[in-house]
Length: 262
Image (cartoon, rainbow, N blue to C red; front, side):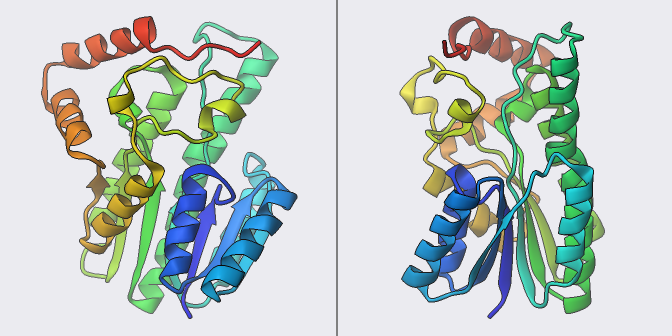
């Protein structure tokens, strides 16, 4: 059976990708930090879907670990999917020059920037040799707003993925950036943040995001925005005057900002 590799696959959106691909019969290599959660997820999916699921405990903010994942990709036989899902919220004062803030920015750049490039290019090499495969990079609708480093990184992921998709044309290998919005996952909790105070209709369901991503990937789409309402919002932000992005960002910062847990 073919294999799917998923980063950040033990919880949240990554776990939904793992479940969806396991249900389609793919063996899994799931990369995440928590060993206990990995063991539980791999055991559950192996038993339920009769596939092989391997858990790899790793801190992806460590460049040496990233190099080890590249080696794993290079030696994976029959690699059908690589899902770059690992990430975390970065909500810092852009004037904060503390050591803690610098470390947070460096970790974010490694996990959601450098690793996306390293893993995508490694997967593309393996998949081109096979003549097939899908690379899915999790970006965000925040890529079209001005929310600091996180928005900048997700914008980078979208542009990079579109570039890879163009480069891979005619090879049988496809690259897709999926741009979800807010979801009810552990994303905010892991960052020590409260849930954003926004209307419920702006939320996406993780299962729907994964369904849209996999469907779009199979159709060869370079960018996938789940749900009709967010397709409209994304188009408005992307094609409207730059003021649209500023107004949307300010609305969010004033009315839907994350609150720190105390």
